[in-house]
View 1 (cartoon, rainbow, N blue to C red):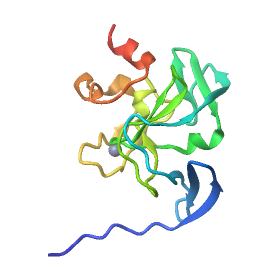
View 2 (view 1 turned 180 degrees about the vertical axis):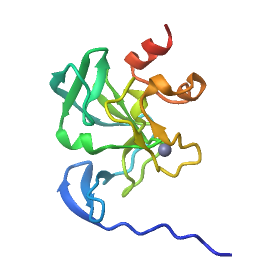
View 3 (view 1 turned 45 degrees about the vertical axis):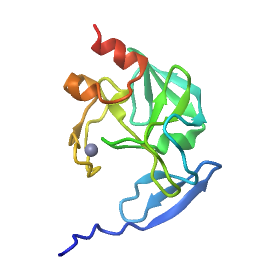
View 4 (view 1 turned 30 degrees about the horizontal axis):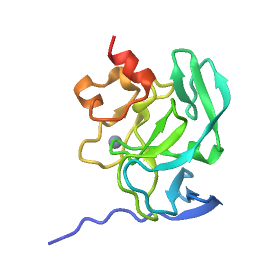
Length: 163
Ligand SMILES: [Zn+2]
């Protein structure tokens, strides 16, 4: 049997924190956030605060409501990348980063962007390689509700799909 090998990524460490480490992919320059601890579903991984409220989204903001997009602190949490099979959720009500899938040391933290973003500033092509990858990520507005309902969603996104 031939095993298809994934390309090996090389990272440089950018910063280390109590719960994890920010690393940069040396070839693409992309930054990612990796866990230094194990977490179980439901664990509160971190708490965050609003650093700034913007009227329009950027690729680093999290949506709170129609015209409120926030930058959060601690800032390293903003390097949590997207996956269609996420292991964390940004709860914008409780301001907690919550574990939604078992995490072990070395796992990359990732969340489902449309769980908080209705209509994203920049659409992108996902290559998270999960079996149910949605490919083009543009925000919850563009996703079938049956698919969305499989994810934990912020109260704002829930309010948008329950109208
Ligand atoms: Zn994906």
